[in-house]
Each structure stands twice: as structure tokens, then as C-alpha cells.
Image (cartoon, rainbow, N blue to C red; front, side, top):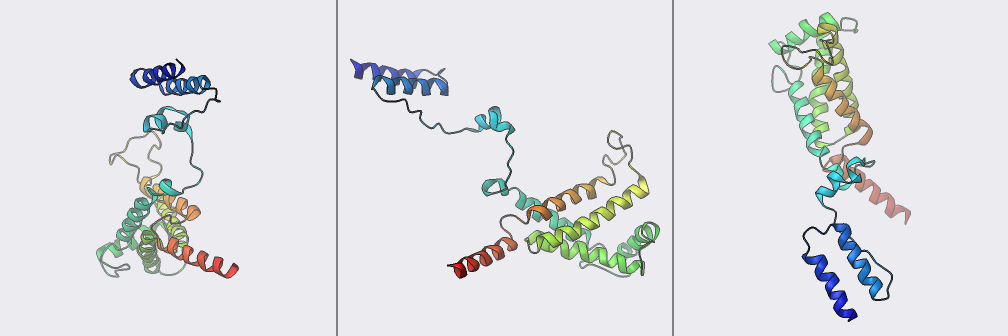
Length: 224
């Protein structure tokens, strides 16, 4: 009779569509009790719906490891490639002296808004180009990521200053502008991205990660 009762409990749990996960766990608990054993609750696989509706909806990842670090790879690569583009205006390589793009940067940005800098304006235009071009290349492949991120963060802060000095806040945060986005919006977002990578490093699929793993393994062998 006990065996027949146990089978009825399992059949009820398997054939009732409206039975929730908690109901299945309760049925298994009753089955264990009927067999004279302490109830053991089976581990139920967490679903995407559980993550979107349960307590994990509010959980914050404190360490970017494993699957949590994967999304930062395309973010790092795309951001670095876009910086290469911004650092090569006027030609394929940076600091294209004499081109309209280079001269325009000197005449309309460096001279009016950065005249307090020492030295020739052309020098600072070239420094800007080299910082964004080579800094973007290093950032994209994840090599010397923290120094590159800090350098690029500095150029973005300068860009934010230029836009605020030339066009102001443009009614931020609720004002509407003709181009749909504030002029300082893009460099401000870039600056935040570079700040994140400066504190957290390149992440997976980076040359920094390969070098660090190699150094760590050599140190571990020496300590053995």
C-alpha cells in the first residue's frame, strides 16, 4: 500500500500542469517522509524567467568574471576602433599636418579654447591625434589598457570642456536640441567608459590578460 501511495504522489506531480515548482518540491518532501527519511528537496534548474521575476532581478554582480565579463569585450574593441577614427582625421595616420582636418582642429578648437596651453597649437593638435589613434589601438587589443584608458579619459575630459565652453549645457538634462543629442554627450559617455576600464582592466580576450596569466604562472612556479 505504501508503494502504491508513493507512486500516486509522483504521478500527481508529473501530470498536473498547474503544479508549481514549490508543489513539486512539496510532493517530493511528502514522499521522503512516507518512506521514513528526512525530506530532501531536489535542486531545480534556474530559468531565465526566475532571474527576471525572482530576487536575482535585483542582484548586482560585484566581480566581473566568467560570463559577466564577456559583454565588455565588444565594448572595449568598438570604443578603441572609434578612437582610432577620431585620431586620424585628415588622413589614414594621425597628425596629418597641412590637411583641412588638421588645420581646422587647430584653428577652431585649439586656438580659441586651449590658448592657455604652452607651445605651438599645432603641437597640441598632434598630441591629441597621437593619443586617440595609438591609445585607441592599444585599448582595442587590450594592451597597456589602464594607461591607454587614462590617456583617452584625459582627451575626453578636454573634449567635454570644449563643448561646454562653445555651446554650453544646451538645456541639459531636459532641453531639446536640433541634433537630438547634446554636443558634450558623446565625449562624456566615452569618458565614463574609459574610467570603467581604468579601474577594472581590459577583461577577457586581451593581450593584458595573456601577459598577466604568463607572469602569474611563472611566479607560481618559482614559489613552489
